[in-house]
Image (cartoon, rainbow, N blue to C red; front, side, top):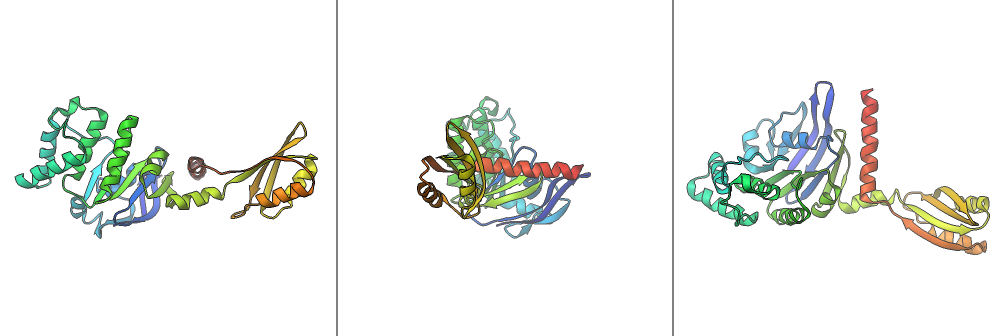
Length: 318
């Protein structure tokens, strides 16, 4: 449904987006995750025909974003981070105006407004002036506008920014419902939003894609950075040397206090030497009071890889 190949956007000598490539299948909810300034909004503006690319290619439902922009606009619904609503209009008036711009005749326009009012839970607010609506309700009006022409693809830029926890929960639920009929690309810098809503995640930092995959695939990468924590009594050097020699152990750090050694054990990929550690301690007649797997979180993984990429980008600038 969405295909991007080597997409690049330069501002003078600075690359906002650097040769990114990805694809999104029909019916998927894909999260575009990255810190502020990573290039998420720039990418979305290029995909929605609001900004030209410096190089690369992109297509939506087979239509080239850069040479068939009108065809692309007809099949996408775009909710920008800052929804450009007219505060002096009532919500219904605004949606009517937007329907006219999209070329909907009177009957089709009224049917579309009725549909999006129900989809976005706007029934109690549809005839209020937009300037009297809360941030959350304005977001719903913006989303209703994006849905008015029943697009195949929804591109949502930070759809929950500025919302309170109840509104965020409602918006998550709404996006999951919309994904039953639309392909959704959702950007955010807030990890829990992506985790709670999306089937697949693309992580971008300093204009480059640094990781992507389903939640399970990303969790597998997190497991590779996991470590074991153990507390074992016995001579510090002997304990450290014996555990370091076990298969699957890459590195051991040890801190000792009151006859107990607290060990942080880094393992090789796809290995779990806990059983070997237990057997070693038992055979040496040492004592053990803790042995557990300390698995990194998706948040830690996100922070680490984005920090690494940002650091690399700064070095390249120098």
